[in-house]
Image 1 (spheres, rainbow, N blue to C red):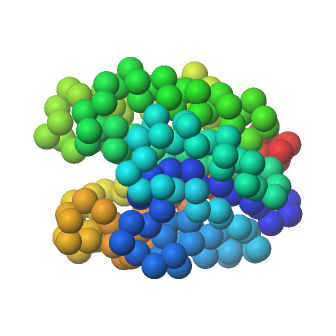
Image 2 (cartoon, rainbow, N blue to C red):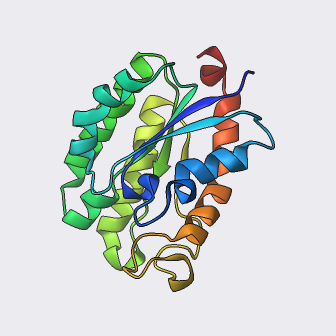
Length: 192
């Protein structure tokens, strides 16, 4: 396989809110992929504050800016929907359309699962289930975005207590890279 070209499509967690460009999820993931995929390129298509509705509206614009078709799209969205109390039915519908649009044009998708804190109770569980259901429906891989003990851990967060700092993003990228490697080996990614 030639050096993979990956689109990281998401919100502030992808964009690297409060961080330098080289500290963003896309940049750190790109560096961590070099040992197994020399020359890998990860495009940062994260926009801080994006809900799934806003991301859906900008998807075609983001795709039109690319010079080549990605070998993989990482879809990392839903955290802002959760924080703003947007109904899960709307989040599900928007993610469903985003995944459908990407796969329809031959871009394999890796869905990043947003898990709500335990304090969200049944709503949080329904949120996690949403990602698993969409992955099963579209026959795509899904992986947790946050590794254990990173979310809301002061060691890994900016002063706002929500967004990961550079160390937190490094931990996220390191934990997420096996899912990316696996997705790149999948038949749908090789065919792209």
